[in-house]
Length: 105
Image (cartoon, rainbow, N blue to C red; front, side, top):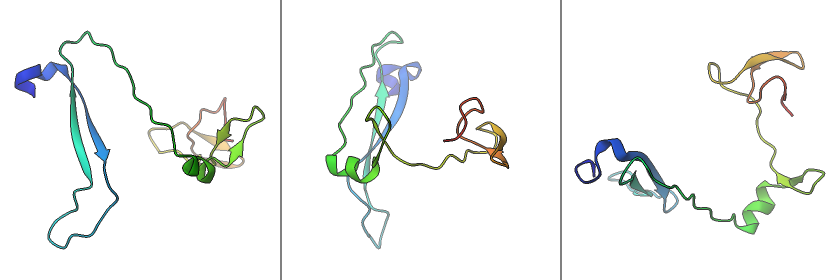
């Protein structure tokens, strides 16, 4: 691909999960495909692709609604040391996923 498109036009590697894990006693299961994303030049248009969630997934994981009716999921607000801001919230000092001005929910 580098020879065709030039290494400078490499953009990303995309791992596409094509099946759930399965047992294989001789090797790791082939459960994903890898796509290499290149562009012809550095001047390109990117059109992101979206696939709607299955309604069953939405109902199972996005069980909560805000006052405007938008759905959301409950999630962990603990961040990672060296990546997220560290400050005290409710008596606990640690990294949090949100800046102090916004605060964990």
